[in-house]
Image (cartoon, rainbow, N blue to C red; front, side, top):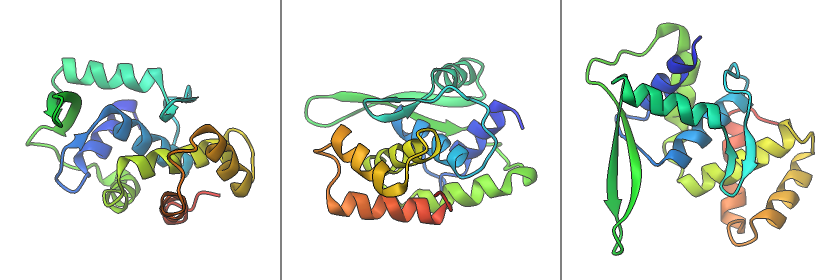
Amino acid sequence: MAKSDVVLEVIGNHNGQKILGKKRLQKLIFLLIASGEEDHFGDFEIYKFGPYSRTLSHKVADMAYRGRIREEVVEYGDFKNSMSSYAVKNDFESNDNLISIAEKIKKLTEFGTLTLEIASTFAYFVGIGHLSLEDAINETKNLKPKKTNQLTISESKRILNILSIT
């Protein structure tokens, strides 16, 4: 499976909705990798908003430049902040060989980006840091104290359970 196939499946199987934000796209792909899907990006590091891959960022930009995906800048909020929006072309058809990715992404669409950020940070510390889930939660609380309330932690653990991570 090629890197671009993974990106196309994630964007194309987001329940018919555009993916709003580079952060959301990064977290969805990282969670797929943490759940056992093949890792084509390999360079995820922990950053301010959780696991981030420069390779993935460059691949998405290249796919947008080549017209394989649509990337638009959308404004939001009173201060006209902006974020990227990602969609597949109208002729997108899911790859039957990648059905597990499609199923997992459809399960994750109900969760907000902050919850995906916290869940992917937990998964990063468990998988790459080799910590127990409780130690990963504590490490994440230390790293992101304002983002780790009980509801977010509970929902993030639910994501890990859905994807059979830990």
